[in-house]
Length: 150
Length: 150
Length: 150
Length: 150
Image 1 (cartoon, rainbow over the protein chains, first blue to last red):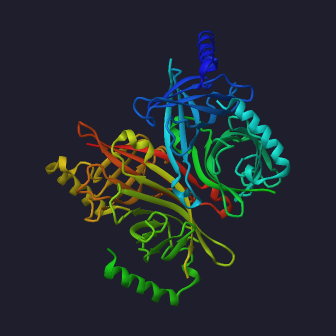
Image 2: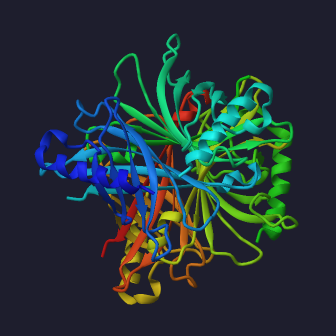
Image 3: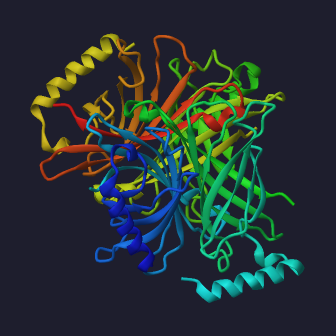
């Protein structure tokens, strides 16, 4: 799915990471792992704070099939704020074809005294249902805490 | 992923749009009003289902000051599904400067027998807080139902 | 489950309803119908604002089988507040045996100029899962609006 | 608020705890601490699984003032299930008088190989607002994980 673009993106990130450091704290660009053992890779941010990337969910996937789904989001004033809020969508891609689903995450980045970053997020998962009568059961909710993969 | 098919499809849609309407139902492009008297304008969708737009919240704004905030999102297989799921972020812009906040919406479009479209959404609102200790109070949740403004 | 107690409760409610009126507004005692076509019957409140009752969910039940599940809750200062907040649990009883589940509702009663009462609630539904790894998918969220059945 | 009843309850719990052990796992009776440094004490359960108790929130309270608020709830088939679901309400009592608020928690108890119990909960907090127009901002959501205080 990500193919060449994804690979060169990761390469670019790797190169950039070497040179910069503290002033990039709590900018979402980079790789993150959640307490649910999900991983995500986030691109460089645009001037307006927009980013894209990919989300890999072990929990939601069949055991031998770690899936990658595209994510898109935005971060508040990435260059000025130390503990910015952010939000992103994950458009789930499954190898087999269950009902379509979509997730949204919203949260804030915190940095502790040692410079460790934590993304505190809450998410909603919407599953496709057949009719408005089944709408009541279509939303799941939960929390996810991400730390940076170094 | 969608390649040529996507392109010719958009072309076809563009041509069709002039004359017809129904087959474009439940594509998010256009103007919507929510039960909370919020309005949003959504752009044309990209091949991958991505869209941008603006969100106007009367409820959240001072009375004489209807604010416009940028939204970005994505819709599942917009061209193939009759009742697609979607998600988007709203990066709030306030005229004065309260703590920064970010919203995410996720939902599904339904169409009734008369062709009326309804967007059933649930949202999360994240407000910026000073420290992780205040994280518990930073997330609000709610639902919003949108109908198309004609 | 409700048997004789339930019957005399309903009888008591019927008797009480005749005599009193406006000052009982936004006390939860009585019968309510939600926008999802659920119904609930709420007992008299204790001095501390506690109540019990039963919840009938058409949406969650097989078509020919309207289920009744016990509810328990509490209301803030029922006698002094015009628009009190409240919360309650519903312990689901199913005729067949799916995984066990439990719901909690929290909300506030509003009264409009005509004296019509509306219960604005948000709920969480927890379904039993086999292990903590499946915890992420165990919570559903939604909203319900109740009006009094007269 | 809890006075003599509360005291003898705690005494009773202390006595009972000495004698019993493994078969009482994942029965909510006892004392629990959350990851947000909240504590709760839960009474013996009734035959129907009902319980009461008190909730002490450090996070929500002014620093020198640890508040105690009454909780009421119910647990599924406490005697038969190893990993039961449960729900409870907390009717907040504040020393000063902010708008009234009410919380509901719902979750499931898990036990690991060492017999350690964990309560995985999600909660909603409803704050009193002045009118239905402010309803959209009245619900907060979050998660709490409790472990037993021994």
